[in-house]
Amino acid sequence: MKMKYGMSMAAVLLLGTVSPALATSLPLPAGSGTDIQTESLYDVAAWLPSGESKPFLPQRQWTKHVSYQPLSLPMVPPNHQYAGVLTIHQKKADIPALAVGVEMKGKEADADFGGMFLPGGYTQEAGKKMLSFNMALMNSENILNEIFLKTSSSARTITGQLLPYDLLAVDMKQVEQLHKVKSMKDTYAFSVRSQVMVDGWMLPLYIRGVAAKRDDAYRFLMITGWDNSREEIDRTALEIMR
Image (cartoon, rainbow, N blue to C red; front, side, top):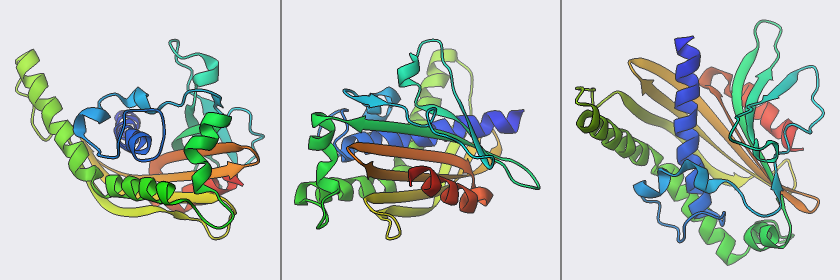
């Protein structure tokens, strides 16, 4: 139970870093500019899409090898329940993961993301924003650890309890920058391998992110699971986005 809680907590923390970074580096509706500052990451909800957006994972026809259960939160309406539990079914053991899937379309989405998916490549503006996103990924370890340190310090002041400053920590082992997927049209991907320490537990986690244009819509997917399941996560992520 503690391990499952630890994975969920660590995954939320990591997604909380990547998501606002995506919001400020790519043209999602959160903040302005491309400088990734610590304070911009506290508002995890800021990255949530506006306009013509919806979750696309619940509507997908799932195979016997993969299943999905949306995370239903009382304060979140069904049309904004983007996250859920993904289970990859294997012969030996099932592989659990957390998934976030968003689909956007319309004039606003075209203006924001259309420059990434041109027949001849991408616009100069889109290239700059993708470069900024990659810079945020490369710096995400420093960003997260600074947040964790400030959070522990604030908690000590507010509660009076001598919480350890290393209660939460992350070590980004490997970052695969945002790049085009050669085997799939109009598709980008990135990944992060990390070790997250949560209250003495060392959790090796893996994030695979995929962005794609399908017909007149833009789809964004992030899957977080155990690092030793990264091959299965990669395969499932691309299968979902085909």
